[in-house]
Image (tube, rainbow, N blue to C red; front, side, top):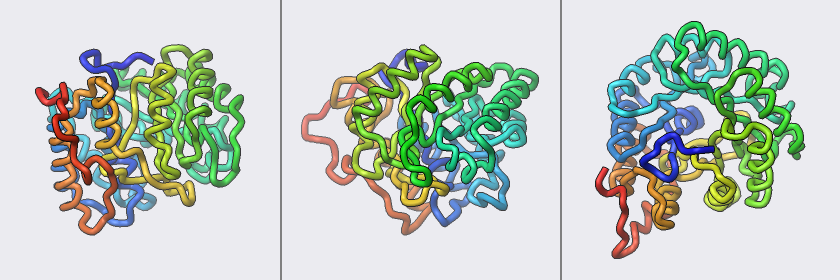
Length: 314
């Protein structure tokens, strides 16, 4: 679970332009999306999930995916990621030029059917097909198969840890470069996070990927810290806590990027992200989604007096 960005201690992977925007009713105009992504990049974020390649009739918020990718590719040093639910979406994303694909595969049988209309076994086959497509079209592109509902499901309830470990092993066997764990429904607790990431790492080693936590019940940062304690070094977060999962009723609130960056920097860990510029990146978000509620304790309180951040020089 090493961090790909060697100059930092942890890698913050921003998912707001995808996870955030597809979870709100309004559609942000393309030019505002591009401004927002540029502001996130200017703050020092070097991995951004900029969109998902899904049918526009299902998610009109993502109809401009290829155009958004085109803009993001102009930003130096940025790993441009896109979520794809199937081989059709993967082909479009690869043709658009993304650097990394993320594929959501649910540990919950009920959520899998609701989210992508496929069983877990069918999704493993889909990952295998996407890997074959990647190998043919763009072999340098990385693939992360993220295990959603790894810590519980609003539709099914408890998800067996053995199911999560089995799924992680199957996804790596299918050719995914890494597999992370997502608290899609905001049901995780720190003890569970430590235990499950430890078990997955024992199964797939350094192919264990990011921690994607939600703050639905106020435990987002605590769960990120628990994941850090057992070796996770890549963390998904969303500026202003925007987003959730449209197919997980009652689940909302990604971990707030600003708060996560502050926590790690306050601990003396380098994120490569400038907090002041990160807070400034809320402005294009507000302009593109007027009236949308934005969250975050750090932006409201400001950084403490005398706080010195190593990332001020980015």
